Amino acid sequence: MIRSYPKSDPPWSNATWLDLCESTEEERAQVEAATGLRVPTELEVSEIESSSRVFTENGASYLSTPVPSSGDAHTPLSAVGFVLTQRVLITVRFANHAVLDSAFLACEVSSGQTACEAFLRILEALVDRAADALEHASSDLDTVSHAAFHSEKSRGKQLRQKTQSLHQALRKLGQIGDRVSQIRETLLGIGRIAAFVMETNAALVSPAEQARLKAIRADISSLNDYQGHLSGKVQFLLDATLGFINIEQNDIVKTLTIVSVVGVPPVLVAGIYGMNFRHMPELDWPWGYPFALLLMLVTGLAPLLWFKWRGWM
Image (cartoon, rainbow, N blue to C red; front, side, top):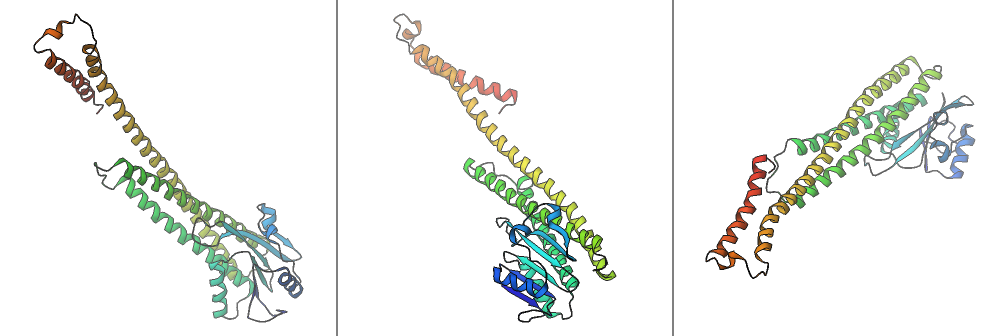
């Protein structure tokens, strides 16, 4: 699919912005014929080397960056390519992106947009989306943190419920970590693009647009700092959750150890008096049976009292 701003039909000789979304080879050839510019392929746009993501070719700036197609961390990043000249902007994408769609509609509403202005509008929208995603991730982390450290824990809560709660917390932290990592990669790509356009295409950008690029780079710098803070918080909460799991496991092992130790002396007494020897003085005692029961009770309570005195339970 090809969209043009201003809206027109081929050959799009007056187009300021051509948006190619999952375009066919025929559509790519039409755009190349209309603009005289090479349209990058999906493989070229997806390259991770810095020299492949920002470079100049025949007077046009070829730029690319990974962009989340949605706010869901389960959705992988999708690369978006830009071909920027003073006359026309070509965007090449291989998935639907709400940010580019909204930026395109905004250009159609406000007429008279230049190619560079449309390009800056896209970058600003991507930075705004990244900021919103970081705010949402911060809110989710606050919820997990409050549940972990500030909520009242029921002492009668079953072990199964505790285990499920800890597993849910781990899964939630993993999703937040993935989302923050995606935002970091997007901000890194946008910052590289903004720096390249600002430093190597000064003739292409007006003083007012230079100021907008500086504002974008400043916003990215602050968001990178905030993203670093959130990454550290994710790691801290992950370590804390794993610590809670270790505590639960230690409590289970401690309980089983106490039960096994407490049960050993009574079993030993029962084993002694269960031996079938003919000459056992206690067999002739009138109170031999109550004496054996009392001895098993005392030997069972003695370890419990000792554990209590040592503070182990």
